[in-house]
Image (cartoon, rainbow, N blue to C red; front, side, top):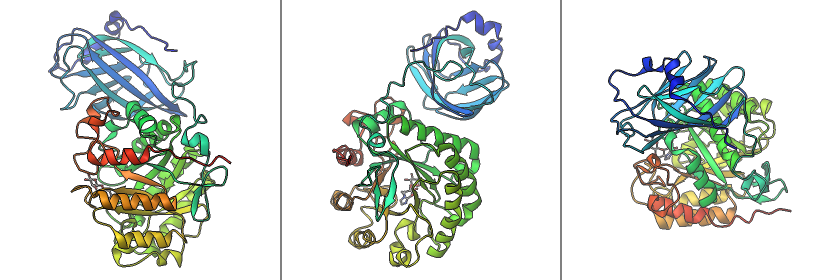
Length: 466
Ligand code: IDC
């Protein structure tokens, strides 16, 4: 399956890559680069790049990737500082991965765009020394063999359930039967993109047996507003990674501060027009249009929703859309209100659900009561919750978390837990440093919260199939 492109040392010299060496770099005696196009779509792609140092240890590295022409453009990279000049893409190691012992490897990657076909790199060099390399996947020589991951359809959540829709107060599958989707939310993809790679997504699908990946794309805090094209493309590649594993992908427009989603109305329209057009034919996409409205009335949220939903529907008429609620998606409870403001004035659109969020150590019986009442009247989705306090930190509250998850199971309300990341906070599922490595499966990498969630999510779904 792998079309191996042998890259000779002379090739790099001919291309003049020696001239690209950064002056302070330490020379490497040998290196190997595995360049894998993990996914590709109309005009764009995502590539994983594994750099193995075969020479003397280096204290800092710079990788140059020579492309045949300048038609390919770097959009966003991770686990390195990425730049492009002409047809050369350059990645420089970060504090935590810049030293490479002999035999050690760094896993980096990037998304890019291209105009005609996706060109293959022609040479790699580490600190100016040519590397051997392999290039797998992508046009113009698409992989002749199927993806190693079983195609959706063979027992995966999306394979079994197909496209979902709202029926009554439930989320229903292709057999029009209520289902509960259980999964994990990313942390902010602007900060933790290193946590979302083939190994971690395999673990989520196969070990956690999750149904859902929520993709938290912050709008502020160094998020979407700083690089709309880059974040749109990164979200799309995460949708593809979920799709390849038969997982639903919830695209979360993670508004938080400021709390009025109307502040980001123009951005939301631009973003959702793009992702809805691009993903319209997929079975696995759910749109969440405003993470946690706060300091704003339900009327203002409803107005926002009634402007953004038509933009999505114009491109993707059938997808489920989830609308955030007042008071950090508490149905208004955190603002002293209740679900009745939504019941009395629902969003004027079909096939939608409402978001409810809780943090188990902060939100207890009165929040559970509000959600239980709401669930008889409104289609609800717990698009984010934590096992800890609303800060994302503090002590895990096992009793409250268990009460919540039992309630959600009983009501068949879907959920995504904050977070599938190694953030240094107790809400994260992985211990700090996990995403620097490649092990997402052993119990040793899990936090207390991760252990609890994995044990809950990995139980059998028993989705109805008729
Ligand atoms: C928190 C993160 C934290 C980050 C902060 C920045 O856990 O690392 O510094 O955001 O905004 C939410 C939000 C979610 C919060 C989370 C925990 O949707 O963005 O993440 N939380 O505070 N609502 C309630 C809690």
